[in-house]
Image (cartoon, rainbow, N blue to C red; front, side, top):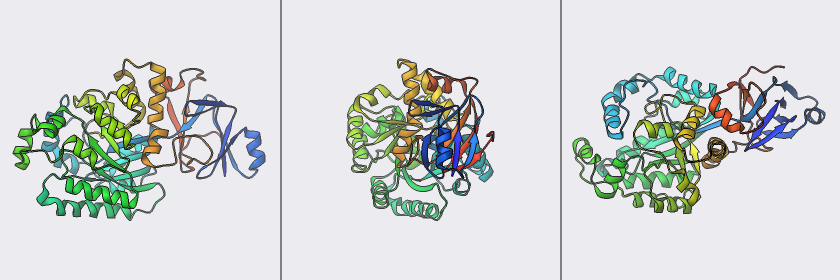
Length: 409
């Protein structure tokens, strides 16, 4: 048992002063330091420095690690030029990101306060690095392939990668399934993958309505994707409409990523099926896809959670920076309220969507916590100032274990 005593505790917009937490793998009690010492006389006591803030670890629900070698190779500004640049540089970028490259990306997230990630893996090349990471990892093995004639081979490749991830037996590593997108995955493959996720109760994710090109292609077989599919796959029609794609996930709550071009009726469907939306604002801006309409999500009661996407469409994997971008992107929303909403999207709502027991400092939750060094106590609009100023993350605790520590004994 351990006891940790900060200046302030933050959990789900609740600020507590002069309180401490007793924990092992989970949070056992929240009380005054004196009461916890009396209750747990043999516990290791850690007193944090003045102006310290203890809060839940951040959860990055959607990150691609296999393209982490990118910095200046890809074309930003519009989705299709970006996609063509990915194809052009694909082999070089994938070949240029070995286990050390992936580990560097994982360390960047850990150092900036992320304790849990949803890693979207297309090839399984990031498996060893994520398996050896200190982070909690929900490892999404991705299904991709739009040609029916290749369905068996593509499913076999996916299943092989999935089974490899299932051999990882460390605490905090959870195999999961991702469907790439409506335009890139044949319904035969989607049905089989969703059935597997349902049978094994695995987290499930999919990209959905990220770009205008995707919507035009899936709705009318037109737009910028038409020459793309004709050239690369000799395909003149989309394999899914948006409506048909969503129907394949009926009965199983799924995290739909991006959704910048989602329509009201599709949001209503997501609400009825208890789906959530993963918001990646920096990626959406860099690829020219516009902003997620979070007001529409609020109206339809569809929760959004936060992700960074990968370094193929971002310059950072720091969730504080991601939330800062969202803060300025959604300029009609009241600042302090939006900041609190973003924090919940990076903590408790993300935990719930991933099926985890994290995201709050409360008894019974996993002991995933981070310590921020503030300049002084912040009495009002705390979440807003945390997003704006990027205070140092001096300590990280994951599943009760200190993985980054500068704590005063």
